[in-house]
Amino acid sequence: MARGYLEVETPVLGRSGVADAQLAQFALSDPVYGSLYLQTSPEYAMKRLLASGSGSIFQITKAFRQGEVGRFHNPEFTLVEWYGVGYDHLHLIDEACALIARLAPSLMPEARLVSFRQAFRDRLGVDPIDDPTGLLRECAHACLPSTRELVLDDRDALLDLLMSQAVAPHFPTDAMTVITDYPASQAALARINSQGLADRFEIYCGALELANGFHEEANRDEYAARFAAEARKRHARGLPAIAQDERLLAALAQGDFPECAGCALGFDRVLMRALGAAHINDVLAFPIEQT
Amino acid sequence: MSTYSTNEFKNGLKIMLDSDPCSIIENEFVKPGKGQAFNRVRIRNLKTGRVVERTFKSGDTVEGADVVDVEMQYLYSDGEFWYFMSPETYEQLGADKTAVGDSAKWLKEQALCLVTLWNGVPLSVDPPVHVILKVADTDPGVRGDTSGGGGKPATLETGAVVRVPLFINVGDSLKVNTQTGEYIARAKE
Image (tube, rainbow over all chains, first blue to last red; front, side, top):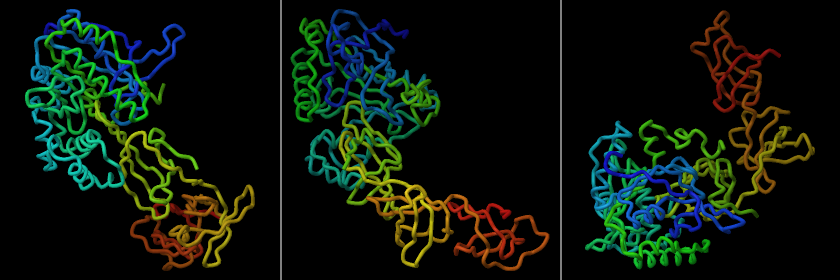
């Protein structure tokens, strides 16, 4: 990138796993190190570089996620991930949209910014931040008949369901829609802003998520608290426990983590948009079934 | 009985849904990068033929349905049941009107059919895709017309009615596609 970003390379195989309860990591067994993990994204490693003073960095790398196979998923895929030092998420939205527009010129270059709340209000007439879970559940059962038998007691799962199946499918397919201001429960590692919402964004093209980004949280204790919350979710769901990444926490503890924003872009999906491919297999030389 | 996780969902998998045997005809994996994964599945109820859409949380399990497809020879019908025999075990089974349904009009003795069994009981019967059947009734043939344009209805020996070219006569053997119900050609016998 001609924008002052340094290209870096971080390991795809590492000793620490990802905290996120929604991601299943490939765990390998090594006679020397015991469990080793294929990385679900280069986020933790790149943040250690940022904490050690790398300045703005980017990389194009492989990432791996278990159980993710479908029209838009292959267990091994390519991420473009970058962190801009001194920037907030709004600046990174501009960069990400410019990059996507350049890679997929058939898309309209102007992106539409909509808050998470407004997107739900416009489409479903409910407030995803303030409305009670029961109301959101009624809304899901009413607008998605295929979910009527589904037990939806987890608020975030309900929001994920509504966003992916009732809201996003109505986004224009020939332009980018940027969703901002996520509920705090869906902050991942984004900062919480003064409205109590997460400074996180997702870029959609139709219902397809192309990129996700944060104004990055910098506080070590906040990371530890969010890792612990994910660990509790893992425990409650009977998922394998993942030890928190102590090296990342130690790097953050030094207090030199810069003010920055980061973005991860699903390169295969952008390629799908650019080429008009209906299936991710159409942009991979050897999709998983062919390996 | 076996259970299947959504991770094992694929087209053709037979599962139980609302106490009925069903077959998966489409399975879409939907997952926000940072969120809960779902499987949006189109399912055919094998008893009623109706197609419904269901959404499952990824990782949920469902009970498998003991549904198998076996090749069986059609023997005869007594009006209430249609009897089939396995060419391997010589076992005979009767399929009722609900199971045979529209396939009845294509069934000729000895035809090898695909019989779908649920817990050993016939659930549906698929005739061979191509069958050769004699014309039982049709308007007299028009000599010299081989164009195939126009056409007329012909009732076949099994009761099916298909559109045939004008030159076809009573007693002719026809090759017919049972899936589309269309005449293909005259068959030499």
